[in-house]
Length: 201
Image (cartoon, rainbow, N blue to C red):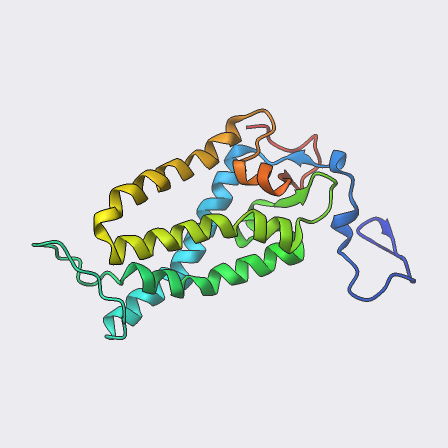
């Protein structure tokens, strides 16, 4: 028997890596920048629905233990604290990380039919796909939230550091279409469509 056009190995141990991990890197086309952007937007919507919206509800119910001082005249009292929002958003974030570990895909990447792989063609997995590729930026965001909440005098420094972190995405305009975190993790985002059908933009 075969699965997905590949021969089935009856001697493969249980829990073996998915078949996609055994494809040659040359059998993929690089994911287009538009596909990556669309996937990122889809992931943002997913995080908003399962992360930010519940944080707003918790805040409205009066269970926000991290009150933020609002500027004079502000009417954004419905806004949950940044720390609460960050903690609640861990639920969809951890789920996304689990998906990356299993298949190299987030919800958005599944929707756009793209995948994170290593330069050898394997599924990125936890170490490269999550620990090296995603965690540093999330830690930076969490530290920024802590500082802006409890040390507002340092907000300017946080804004500068956060602004520099946006340079990460500018690397995608290079020929290899890899962000800085892809270079750090040794990964690349590819399209699941055959190279002849994949969009180049």
